[in-house]
Picture (cartoon, each protein chain N blue to C red):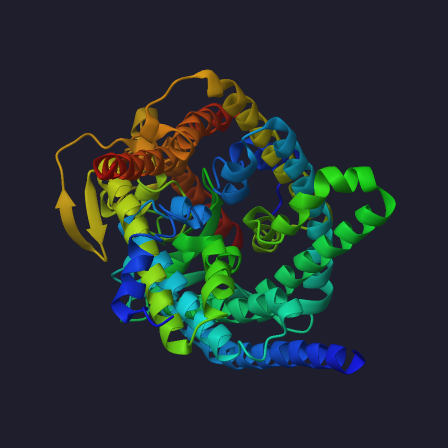
Amino acid sequence: MNKEYVMVMVKIVLLSVIAAVILGALYIPTQAQLKVYQEEQKQLSLKIVNPDADHFEPVKSGEETLYYLAFDAGNNLIGYCFFHDQPGSQGTITLAGGVDTGYTVTGVKIMAHSETPGLGAKITEESFTGQFPGVAEDDLMLSKDGGAIDAITGATVSSVAVIDGLHAAMNEIKANE
Amino acid sequence: MADMTIAGEFFRGIVKDNPVFALVLGLCPTLAVTTSVENAIGMAGATLFVLVGSNVMVSALRKQIPPITRIPMFIIIICTFVTIIDMAMEAYTPPLYEALGIFIPLIVVNCIIIGRAEAYANRNTIKFSVVDALGIGAGFFVALVAIGAIRELLGTGEIVLFGLKLISIPIEPATFMILPGGAFMTIGVLMAMVNYNKIRKARKGA
Amino acid sequence: MEDSLFSIAVNGIFVQNFLLVQFLGLCSFVGVSKETKSAAGMSAAVLFVMIIASIASFLIYTYLLLPMGLTFLTTISFIIVIAFLVQLVEFIIRKFSPPLYRSLGIFLPLITTNCAILGVVILNTRLEYGFVQSVFYGISAGLGYTMVMLLMAAIREKSNAIKVPEAVEGLPHAFFITTLLSMAFVSYFQVIPT
């Protein structure tokens, strides 16, 4: 009986070890790919939120990147870009934004969100984000409050979250300037 | 079991043993991720991968697995495949991974998979286990895509697949269909239709 | 995440109700909500295992998996922990309280594959909750599950008297009741400030 019991234990342990080894071996390449993807996405997003810029330079505090400086081909500072996390109606909305040196918006892109599909999820669409470029900081509010941004029907909370996120990020840059 | 044919075993999974409509298994992912056809396809694909992988492994090891510890061993095997697809999707299809969220790791506790390991793969050859997994996986796929299509079409007025607009209908989108309530209603209506069909057939036969 | 305990509780019980909004634990929901007695038994078992699983998984994740860089083994270790805990609880209850075992015992083996349990522990790590938050979320999610389970069982028991078309009897009928419950949860509780 004992021998049988030992065999059962050995088999379970062996199976677990094999499973762990396979997963460990696959973990390394997938993590590397994930890093590559995230970096690519960041660079692409920066280009989208400030299309006039030629290259970007991170402004760091220790290891953490606070925001990016956007330069044109002649190495002149033409604006700031940033990534910002803002609580939405469901979860966190991660957005990328760009402003010129006078804090007029150059572009907005929603990186990640978990808003309601079909409603709040429309913040990713061009019909919403397309309203932002060219809007000055003072006009950056909903049109019903006298601003320049039309809220998505049925998803005011998500729309306001994007606007609030931009304001918060701008204030952060001003504080660090 | 000499009367088993490959085609027969395959189609059994889609129609007679359809995991969602006939066996009523795996309800959580079925309802949670079917807000769009794209998510439905992603979920069904991931489940199919795990189903085929675990069925093959369980069938291959069926003479080695001691009966008393079979459930923990099935779970370890299934969990390995789930973690593989979890890591792969996170790295290679991040937007889809975000959309499916917690339901990828939860494939582990999808009763369909452990059910097939226990009821089929543990007793049959590798060849038939693969066919069984493909059939059940296809049945799951059909159910998910059907529910996803109904909800996306009525809820947003169009079906968008990988950036392509497939169909759009001129209706005022009924947001309700995208919300959780719409999921429960859709599966309720579909099940009633399946039942109705069954009852009618039974009456004809009698 | 800096969620306050109040908002975790409101989220767990109402706004993000596991059964009606997040679709977690549905198999047990349609299976055992036919009568109040078994619904109560199942709910008590789920609530209990959810709490101890939240505690155990937090300790394992924070002190074992994270420092050793083994996060790719998260799912596999959580499911093993849950299976182990369920066995342990079953053993303890059988030994010390046979009456309790008779009412809860048959539901315990079903709990390992209940996605509400694995769901709560995975959500805890994904939302980066601390220890108190994790346990609190476990309790709230369990209470939310219990409430909906009892509501549903009560409605189903009463609605036995209603005559419905033959094709709608059973599961479709249960799903239609759930539709109405879910609509109530999604629409009404959204207004609670969290």
